[in-house]
Image 1 (tube, one colour):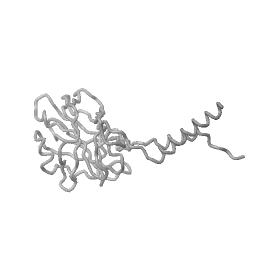
Image 2 (image 1 turned 30 degrees about the vertical axis):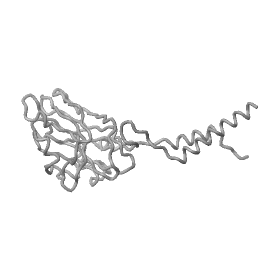
Image 3 (image 1 turned 90 degrees about the vertical axis):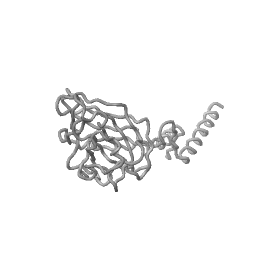
Image 4 (image 1 turned 180 degrees about the vertical axis):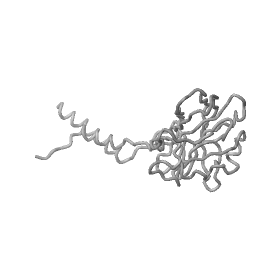
Length: 237
């Protein structure tokens, strides 16, 4: 006997086809819980980060995370940023695409602390390279502030392509402008290494935008709804 797909079942199938999975950039899953780079903070290197390349049509950066542990007993004051990355010149370029509120890593923490940054939706471009980074220039050299270690994989994340993303740093001290005007000290020194890093890329074009759903599945879904309505009217008659 031939089995027929009911209209409700068709609706479920079509609706499932409209669901889009985000792109998750994740080197953190390869981190062994011990390895790290140091010292990032208000006395050492003022900038630590991770470059990444947008390889899919998911071009909206929703959030990203880094993990830090203090070195010593002093807190670390910093701010998170996202900018486009100029791989040829080894530096950030253009205006900052995202700037977080000021952050503080307590000096009494005894383990790595995750700092997760919800960007509100930063529009990126497919095929372009970017850098997400933490910077401590605002309080660099000030008494009462210290340094930290950033969770990282010195030999790179498992199965990760270092040509599309890797750990970077700069000893720019209190000069934030140097990040977009001169080559970073560690722009390629650790090209085979990764920070423990997560970033969620979604479809859409930033805050207030409505993702465009595929036309064909929407048309089929509409036809299925009309068919369901007609079948219900016939059943009542």
